[in-house]
Length: 117
Image (cartoon, rainbow, N blue to C red; front, top):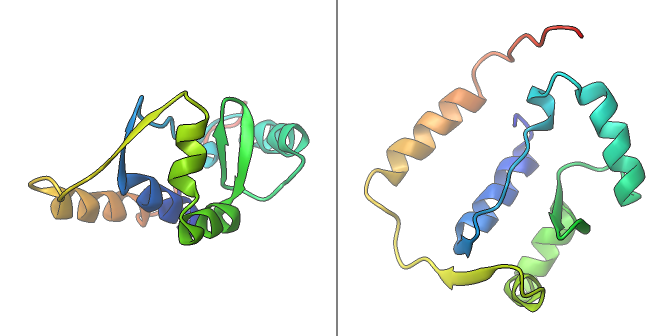
C-alpha cells in the first residue's frame, strides 16, 4: 500500500475498464504479512513485490508490467487469457482527482500499527 510501485501498477490498470475488476491485496495491511510474503515468494518464484497475477500465474513484478505496457502487450496478454474483458476509459469520472488526492492522503499518512498474532 505504501510502495510507490504498487500505486504505479494500480495506475496502469486504471487506464482500462477491466471486468471483472482486479482484486488488490495490500499485503502490508494483513496481520499475517510475515508469513504471507515468503509464501508468495515461494509460489511465484520471485520475492519482488508487488506482483501482478492472472489465473494464479504471475505476470511479473512492476518492472515486467511496465515493460508489457510500454511494448503495448499488456492489454493483449490480459485479453488472451479469456478471463477478463477490457475496454478503454475515455475520460476520468467526475471527482476522480479528489478521490486520487484522498487516496494519496490515506496512503501517505502515518503507517498503521498492526497487532501481533
